Picture 1 (cartoon, one colour):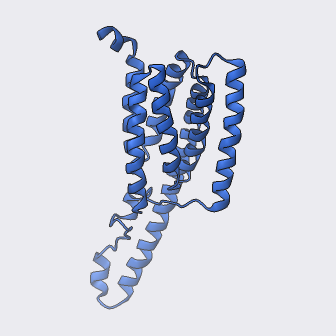
Picture 2 (cartoon, helix red, strand yellow):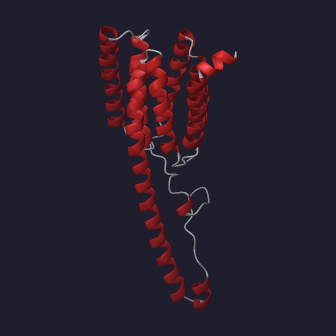
Picture 3 (cartoon, one colour):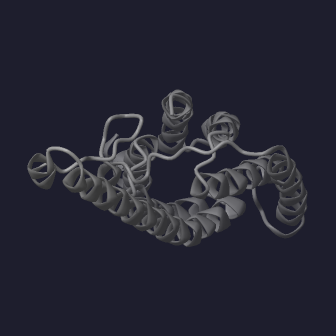
Length: 230
């Protein structure tokens, strides 16, 4: 048991950070992105050691898209914060100019979101719905990527499961892009991709990773419900 644990310490570490990552994702916390960079870097090594070459490349993509997602969320938060500050300033000025001006000078109206938090506290709470044309593009993109990856893995690598490795990777690529846009429907894609991954990783013997993706599947359902309430 100790020998197994020692031999899988990196995989276990990646599984733990991955679980924390998805918790932050559900909470729409911007810290999910830097933690995602760490998790993806770890799993580039884990997948490479186990012959999941598409998964290894996927983790490299995760590193890049995490940097972009971090920037996109930070930029959106800054713009929302600036808009909220302007609204509060106008509201304060109106309060000063109306009846009870002295009271208006001391009161500071707070712009509230649907959860009752101030704009500065809830800059990442916006949830979007994907439009039909974008959904079709995402579907076509994932299928085309699956075909290319599966063929490449089968022809030029010793991947044990080229078909499934390609499918998991293609769905994950599209879902991650959807996450950067904060589309609610990304959770449906994750549920499908993670469920397939659990079966595949159990069959290969990557048990910590299989547990991680089982947790991912459950938390994707939770995330879908949490985001849906927005």
